[in-house]
Image (cartoon, rainbow, N blue to C red; front, side):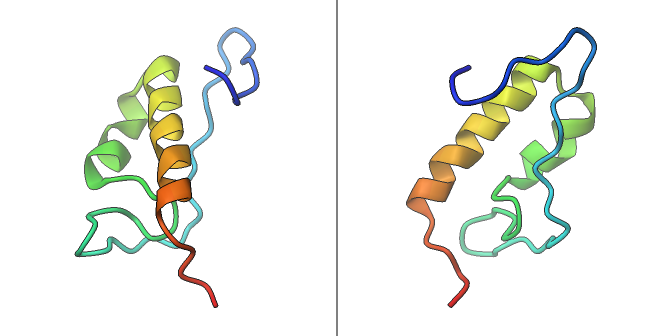
Length: 70
């Protein structure tokens, strides 16, 4: 995938968790990492390819979701 550095063999894609875990009731996404509950739940068993797909979705959401910080 474009925008993500190549991984060495056996290296797992790191979680985007920011330790600011709170699910927004309106959007259903975590306010810290912008993942859905489903994406958070499957992360531990996801392949690197699936993780990269989730990260790509998060990157798209960052464009669409305004920053809640002042």
